[in-house]
Amino acid sequence: MNLGNKTTIIVAAGAGLIMVHLLAQQQPQGRGGGSRFTQPEPIDFDDHSGWTSMFDGMTLKAWDGSSEVWRVEKGAIVGESKPERPAGTTYIIWEGGEPRNFELKAEVKLEGAGANSGIQYRSMRTTQAQGGPAPNPRFAKWNLKGYQADFDFSNRFSGQLYEQGTPRGIIAWRGQMVRTEQGKKPRLLGVLGDPDALKGYIKVNDWNQMHVIARGNMMIHMINGHVMSVFIDDDPSMAVAQGVIGLQIEGGGNVKASFRSLWLKNL
Image (tube, rainbow, N blue to C red):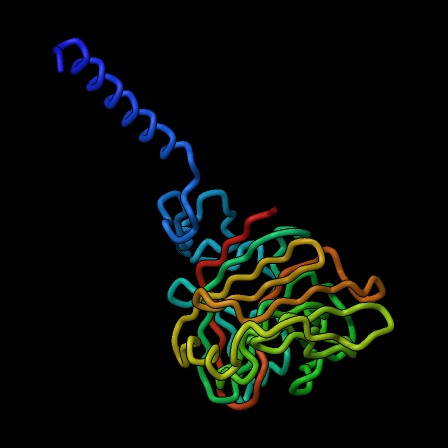
């Protein structure tokens, strides 16, 4: 083979290899290859960029509740009830607005075997008694009704969506995705997980990270990074689009509910 033919073959082969390489780059990789598909990055619960602080960590500025029940202690909003000074079911209400579509993050800790609590949202003030232990008449001005991200010491109800002060009560139990429609009973759309397995992610007598998303008619409750319940409220006679946010204390005996690192992002 003469030198000219040999050079031509080498150049053609090189060009062919380049074309194959370029074509391979242009072709989408299969799902199994995974080279152009990546896992989503987990959120940083402590990343507050774009969020609004609801609590300054030192005072109850922008919060409305009974001073007999609520105070600031060690950088947390604390509600306490004792046998000699029962709080019944009462709330401290954020005065920073009535959010519509939002995300809310908070850390919650309960103390006392009978402690029950939760975060009210899209709620409204009411003069009606609000279930649980008999409300103390002195605290009637802070009664609320509406959606609640439930939380209790024994974690029987933690993570579920409870509607305080209405006949619907518990709507989406832990581990459930539920839809309501006018004139129909709530319907189970799907299962998020075993409720007892999800319960295992919730800490007792310790701080827990609560994350609530309310967007349109869909509400999502998460605790410590795990989805606990999802509710789609398609009942126009009951659905509420916006309202106040409140923190609850409830339960007999010596009980305490503490909240810290409260942040809100409007969507």
